[in-house]
Image 1: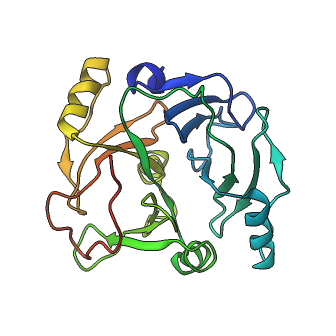
Image 2: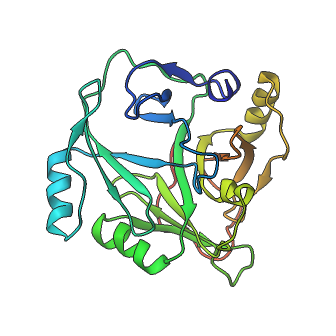
Length: 252
């Protein structure tokens, strides 16, 4: 109900990868897949992050040549090839490829997923994996204080989407804090119009829109499992703290 009726995403009965999951299309190429939890104490409820690649076979061969151990290639029930690999922080990353289907359903939000974030303990090892092996590029970094880095943003090699490494998180963080840190972000053109749409849909908002430390308008909502869904405008409206942006901003 949260993703379909409140966030306005269209459920697609097929195209999922995990068993017993539900897929919601954000747009023609991006999916939020909701998977039943194995147990209530799961540390991260952002279970997996997936990327499109031109060739699953070539990507897997490249990772093998880099000394990594990706899983074998599989196909989902709709015939899409994919494989999974675990990053240095034990996050599961999936690579898949396919031709665009003409019958995909899209959301009525006019939005896109622009980044996903997760807790990182070993920044050096994580940056080596994503930057040196996968070719991600620095985008921005900042923190709660101007001289402190709490978030490191790395863009995909050939686009503007990014991963956000959430560093300096206490090892004993509770589920509430882990749900804030392990998150996904949906880009929108007007945060205040988004706020009103969510209110009209019956979403209980516990926060108001604010300008983040990166200079972008944002609004946080939380799903029933306490995972943060961050709505964020595509471009900053003021100078960011801590560092300049070093890559292009996503487009609506």
